[in-house]
Amino acid sequence: MELSKRQEAILEIVKKEGPITGEQIAERLSLTRATLRPDMAILTMAGLLEARPRVGYYYSGKTPNKVIAEKLHRIKVGEVKSVPVVVSEHCSVYDAVVTMFIEDVGTLIVVREGGILEGVISRKDLLKITLGGQDIHKLPVGVVMTRMPNVITVGPDDSVWLAAKKLITHEVDALPVVRPVEGGDKNKDLEVIGRLSKTNITRLFVELGEGN
Amino acid sequence: MELSKRQEAILEIVKKEGPITGEQIAERLSLTRATLRPDMAILTMAGLLEARPRVGYYYSGKTPNKVIAEKLHRIKVGEVKSVPVVVSEHCSVYDAVVTMFIEDVGTLIVVREGGILEGVISRKDLLKITLGGQDIHKLPVGVVMTRMPNVITVGPDDSVWLAAKKLITHEVDALPVVRPVEGGDKNKDLEVIGRLSKTNITRLFVELGEGN
Image (cartoon, rainbow over all chains, first blue to last red; front, side, top):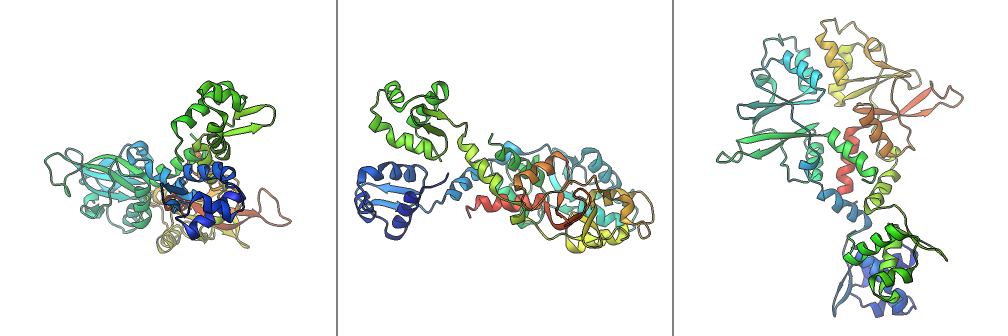
């Protein structure tokens, strides 16, 4: 949404002097209130200004970018997550690498019976191990994975924005999507129901850019 | 931007019957033109409707999502790219893996003298090779990299959206950002000036969500 020069001027006045009445804004711009009405309506509708009866207009602090930001916060992890690719912690490092290639994912999620989260292992982890000169046919992933409670996770009702923020802050490529097991320990017993990676974020970015 | 019920109704009428005059829309809704004026102004300003003198209003085809889409198309690769991490094609696979860990990147760009693009090599490529049982201290990356002209690239003035689309379509984690060398072959002589990865897209997503 592009603002007209007059709308930018109104925004500046309200930023500096708000709360301010429509009459006072019209005076500053040497225009009638009627002339300004559509502009005031636009700025209010777009969420840039807020109007309070008997007080006047004030600046909401929402730039046009804030409006985009709100949209990004409304998209939930559950809407864009992928199916998780899981292995057991007794799986060998060699088999884990093979699974990674067959499923073409960058991160494997390690679970115990019932699909309960135990850990995660990334391409980077596996590359480090294969260089180490150990027998990767005998070494179980349980020895080299990142283990709970050190795994960064996300819930299906969290925003995709929060997931993206965790990916960047914790420098990981993917997050297990989890929900607490009924009757279990909220911090320890997490059922894996999906996977959210930088690829999901990139795909969402492409879709948002297509305007769908 | 949230539309009011009346604005949604106007949008529906124009979608079905446009081009249509303001008077006709007012009639359909049993309202005066004056009442509708702010709504028409908002819908036009937001780019959802377009007005043509003596013809009337018609639907621009731009949904609110299209407005977000346009914003995403306006951000350029040059604004968000990272510095490239490069090696020569004579570099051993072992040294490439070490460089990857030291620089903490998922993709290395292979260049010849003058920073001219020769190929790319990913964590996935390297993981495959380290499993192969060859002597990775002697094997040069030139033998295992994806070589020009099969490398997917992007220019600094391309949109980040196009870059994201290429990452998804070609199933790669990062793209070299290149520009043609003056006086060189446009398809073969590309100077590497950056790197654009799914991490850059994810970071941009986080920033857009912060409203900055």
